Amino acid sequence: DHCCEGDDVGRRMAFAKAFLLADPRFDTKTKTQTVSSLLMLGSNAGETSVECESQRKALWRSYISFLEEEIVSATNLHNATVYIELMYKLAKYDLTNTPANEARRVIRFFMSGAFFDCSELSDPSSTK
Image 1: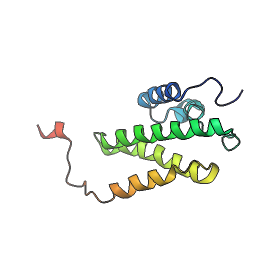
Image 2: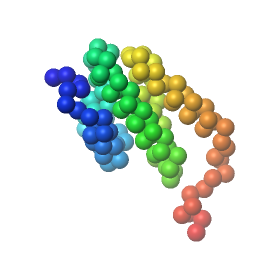
Image 3: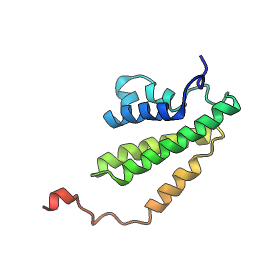
């Protein structure tokens, strides 16, 4: 079974989002590779066709956008941290296994976040 046959990026991303919104550590807690395989992070990811590679790039761009939104909209540090960890894992995987080069986007996001001092922020619901 080939990683890209008959699959579309939107469907893969919709399933991955659903699992991650239910629990950001879905694969770890279920001891499966469900989200990883949906996101094409499998062990054979480096050995793919040009078509599959373009699908992976589009999928990873969508995944990074999802993670950025979850990090920025997180209501507390713990919620943001789990998505930061997922983003870091993708960048690390990208740097070591495939030529997708999405790690640069992740690094730019982390660097831009480093310029903001969030120590004085509070949860809006706790100030009422």
